[in-house]
Image (cartoon, rainbow, N blue to C red):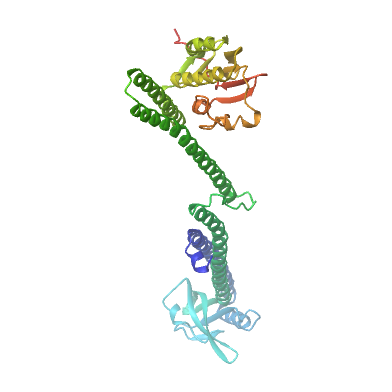
Length: 465
């Protein structure tokens, strides 16, 4: 990823926004520290000046103007002469003694604590320094000034301002570098997803999003996308299989219809022949309609379009009604159809869809069970929910093919000569999915046992009367 593109990413913009907030908050914190520390220095200077002034006033009360002049001369030459400023002036502010050359003009009309610029000699050069001073009027028109050089505060301010400037500059530099690095790092992951998506869009359904193995949200996204792609690939493969099977199952009966009608037209007119052909055509059309109806039922079940029709239902009466319809067919084939119930099984179901599912299971069991044989349908009120079981004594389904037969148009008979469309178990699977039920195919030794386990339905509450 190029640096220019990295700077245009949303990640980099977010990093800049957070950086701006962080720099602004840090600047406010540093400014507060600067203000608080500078204020502490000012308060310390004020206390020192007030203490000096109080002491000098006491000296004046004891020794008069002569005594205070002597003290000022001593302090002006002492070790604190570079820090403190002293001046005794006459009634017209003329200098008497002290380490100032004259009375500052700023202090002639002002009283209290005053800060003003003062030019001092440092070696062979002059410097302008901020000075904080306080004045006191002595008896007989004399004036006393006590001040302090604020060089320490000025130096502190310069150091703090420099430190703040460097800190903000470093924050900005590291923040920009970090934002750029994070943007490039994240965009590499996003680019991998984009490349994979582009390859898949171009038709390569085998491509998968790489997983870094870090377990972060990008890995989770990659796993979800890969699972989705696996599902899409399975659906595409299933669609291709369905398309091929539909082409076979629809083309064969349609060709038979066309051939039968053509032969009827070619042959001599014969009413009995016409009736036979029409009846065979109706039977073929019924099989086609049944196939389309089964496909429609599967689509409706998978789409959940009949979810509003679900209601609390006792399954034994429903199963009895379906089994009653298939008893003549079982007897005609020489099979024994048995219906049994263990308790009153209750489930939240769509009666029509469940009836279709049970009918398909019974139809398959009777169709593929040779005579003499048996078919058993059973309901049970289990602790986890209602259970419907249809078992037969037929050839069964190999364990490695039980999952495959749940697909559409899948038939174990490769010749596909036995009547049927391979949609029976697909519909049962769709109905089970719609109802949140579990569909299981197991051995019946011999034969096949198909079990539908429905979720448990809470007990119905009374009306409270």
